[in-house]
Amino acid sequence: MISKKLANLDSRIVYAVVFLSILLPLWRPLGLSISVSDGTLKVHGLLNALSQDDTVIVSPSFTPSTEAEVYPQMKAVLRHLLSRNARIAFACLNVESQIYAEESMAALAPEFGYEYGVDYVILPFTPGMETAVAAISNNFLGTYPRDAYGTPLTEIEAVTGIRSVSDFALIVDFNTGNTAIYYIQYANPRGVRVVAGASGVTVPYLTPYLATGQLSGLIDGMRGAAEYESAIGYPGEALAAMDAQSLSHASILALIGLGNGASFLSKRGDARDAEQKKQSYGGELDE
Amino acid sequence: MKLTLASLITLVAGITVVADYFVAAPVINHAASTFTQWSVMLSAFSTALGGVNLLAVHKKRLSQRSANWGLSVILLASMVAWLVIGLSLGTESSVYKFIWDNVYSSLSSTLFALNAFFIASAAYRSFRVKGIDTLILLVTACAVMLGRTGLGEAYRMPEIADWLIRVPNTAGMRGITIGGALGAISVSARVILGLERGYAGERRSGGSYQ
Image 1 (cartoon, each protein chain N blue to C red):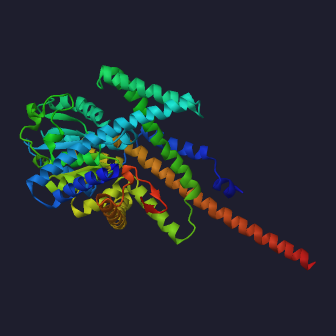
Image 2 (image 1 turned 120 degrees about the vertical axis):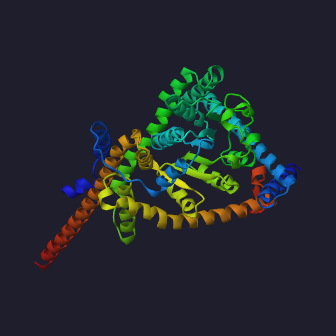
Image 3 (image 1 turned 180 degrees about the horizontal axis):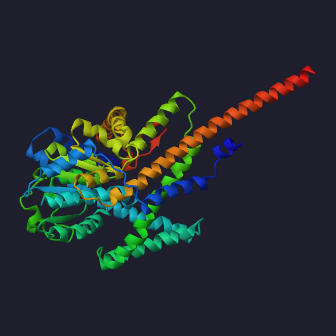
C-alpha cells in the first residue's frame, strides 16, 4: 500500500522537496568543489592569449529567462577580458542585450578603469538574428555606422582600426539559441574565432561545432560559469549557486529513483494480489 | 504580376547571396552585402509590423469582448506604457529600469524557473524503467545530471557526462543537423527557383501550384 501511495505521490510534496533542495544550500552553502572542463579551459586559454590591442565582440544573446545560467558566465568572462585590457564591442542581437551590456559594464568598468568609447563600445540592437549576424559579418561598418547612443563609430576609439569582422580577435557569444551557430556560419569563415557560453539545454546543439573546431571553446551552463569563476580565481555568484544546482539535481535523481522503486514494488504487489485472487478462486472452484 | 515580381526579386537576391559565398567578384560581393543590409531593415520592419498586428488583434478581442478580454487589456496597457516610457524617458531611465528589473526580468525568470518543479514532478511520474530503452535513457540522464553537479566529482561523473555529450550526442546531433541542412537547401532552392511561393501569398489549390 505504501508503494502505491509513493507511486502516486502528491505533486506538492515533489515541489517542496525541490524547493528545499534549492533553498537550503543557498542558506547554508555546502562548498562542493568542481573541476574545470576542457571546453571552459579552451575559452580561458584563448582569452589569456589576447593582447592589449585586441578587440573582442561580446554578444549577450540571452534573455531574462536564462539569465541565472548565462549572465554569470558573461560576468566572469568580462572580468577576465577586462583584466587582459582587451577592447570590447558589444553586439546586441536581442532587445535585451543592451541592458545586459550596460549593467555588466557599469559594475565592472570602474574596478578596471574602463571608459566608454575608449575601451568599450555598445553597438545598437540589430534585428533579424541570422540576417543580423550575416550583415555584421559581411559589412561591419555598414551595419553599425553609429553606436547605441548615436555616436559615429569612426569617432569611437575602442574600435579604431576595425574595418570588418575579420579585424576582431575573437567573438564571445552568450546564448540560449542559435546565435553562436550563426556566428560560426558567417563570421568564422572570415577568420575570426568564435567561442560561446550557453545554457545547459543549448549545449547539445553546439557540441558538433566544438568537435570540428569551428567553435573554439564552450562554457556549459551554470556549471561552466562556476568553472570559469574557478579558473580566473574569482568566486562569484555561479560558484555560490552551484551547491543549489547540485542538490536540486540530486533531489530530482532521488525522486526518479523513488518513483521507479515505488512503481516496481506496486506492480509486484498487484501481481501478487492477482495471483492470490486467482488461487483463491481456483480453490473455491475445486470445492 | 505580384507573384512574378516577388519571384524575380527572390531569384536575384537568392542567387546573389549564394554566389557571394563561392565567388570573389566585387560586384557580386557588394550586391550581396547590400542585400544583407536590406534584410536587417526588413527584419526591423517586420518587428514593427508584428507590434501593429498584436495591437490590432487585441483591440479586436477587446471590442468584441472575447473570452479573457481582460488579459488583452493588460497586454495593451503594458505594451503602450512601456513603449511610451522607453521612447520618452529612454531605456536608461530609472523608471524603465524599474519595470525591466521588477516586472519583465522577474516574470521571465520565474516562468522559466517553474520548469524545474514541473520537470521534477513529471520525471517522478513518467521517468519509469519499462524496458532496456528506458533503462539506457534513465542511466544516461542520471549520468549527465550528476556530471553537472559537484556531487559526482568523486566518481568522475563530469568526465562521463562530457563523453556522453561529446560523442553519442554529437553523433546524433550531426545527423539531425545534416538532415535539416539538406531540407533547408532543397526548400531554399525551390524558393529561389520560384517553385515555392507561399511566402508571397500564393495558395495551394488541389495539391498543385496556381
